[in-house]
Amino acid sequence: MAVTGRLAGGSYADPSRPLTLVLLGESGSGKSANGNTILGQEVFMSKPSSKPVTIECAEALKTIYGTQIKVIDTPDFFDEDLQQPSRHVMECRQMCKGGLCVYLLVIQIGRFTEGERDILERLETALETRIRDRAIILFTRGDDLDQHIDDYVRNTNTHLQRLIKECGSRYQVFNNRKREEQQVKGLMGNIAALVNTDYLTVFPELNAEKSFLSWPSWSFSSSKQ
Ligand SMILES: Nc1nc2c(ncn2[C@@H]2O[C@H](COP(=O)(O)OP(=O)(O)O)[C@@H](O)[C@H]2O)c(=O)[nH]1
Ligand SMILES: [Mg+2]
Image (cartoon, rainbow, N blue to C red):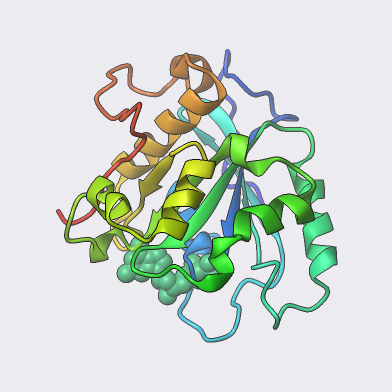
């Protein structure tokens, strides 16, 4: 589903090889909501439910800061209510082909389930890819945070701390109730740093001031404002 088709000259990715962001994680963690915040509009269905809302992989294209981004929303591959999980995994792998992939592992603030303890290993086995080298933990519900995300992570349980470490200690928090561009800017800055140290090469239209980048801690707080 193309949101816009424009591709600025001199951008990092060409239209046939967009920079691909794959949203992964448990049902209800906020994958679709994060996708919508990145895209700046309601593209993926996102709502509270005791059953999985996203039951198919879906993709959307948008030119962000001068480079074409493909956002892939996925169902929870390990949800017992999901029919034919292997078909969805195959679809996801198919959608990832061609572009450089960054994996956004979505975790809700205030929740870390038993199933999430080994989610990285299970995803790597299912997708047959070493996700951890190109993964960022993208927390949702920044609006529930009453402390800085760094403090939240510092004081969280050891299983989540291990997962974050395995993902290179890269994390960020989104408040999807407030779709502020600054959050997306921070994420794109962190993604650029992950795939290429010169972020202006990746996102030629990203404002040259570096203040939004939080390297090396990677955290970007967008909580209570
Ligand atoms: N308050 C709050 N709710 C959120 C946030 N992100 C997602 N949600 C809610 O969490 C629920 C599940 O989100 P959804 O995107 O459908 O999760 P998915 O199953 O992982 O795709 C929805 O009701 C969202 O509105 C957030 O940052 N803040
Ligand atoms: Mg969803």
